[in-house]
Image (cartoon, rainbow, N blue to C red; front, side, top):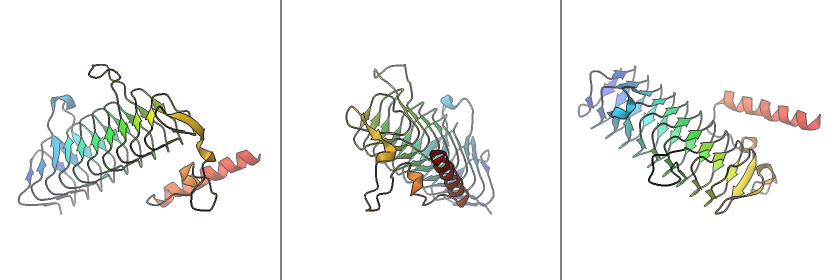
Length: 256
């Protein structure tokens, strides 16, 4: 059964699935759809009204968990198994896939597109109009920007390719495309496009080498990138099986 704490305020217009839990002192507004088995912890505001949403609802898929003091505007859609940290803010117009993790104090601005199995660590800012692929890692204090002459009305979002890793305290400038299977080193300022499979670092960021040349610092000498070669914690068995098939196919191509 759905459980709503007696201190919570839930609009009768909101659509709650089976086994949804709404915690103490939450507010769930009219234009909200929450999937089965989702948990909204204390002091959250869900579906905050804004005219910029153009009447579109906030849709949270099945099995979501939104932790305390988080704020989600109406007009965004999230796939199943969304997980957040505390004090997250998400504006209208975002579309995200399944298994998104949003870290504590993250800020996702409007009109973003986010793929499946994306991981944001804490204190990340995702600027308006950003596009992020599947299986991307974005580490603490990273900022994706969108205004090259601030303040202006000409906004262009950054684009991050599948399996990219953006290390802590890096900044990606407006309109920059960071390719698939790339590494952006810590404290980098990325002002130019990064080709697929490359590692960049510095301010301004420059190409260091192919990411596949970097080795793990665990004494094994294994390749650090693509990271799916060695890191699989928290991913479903079917995803890992697919990765293994892809890695085997690449190896066969190299040997052919």
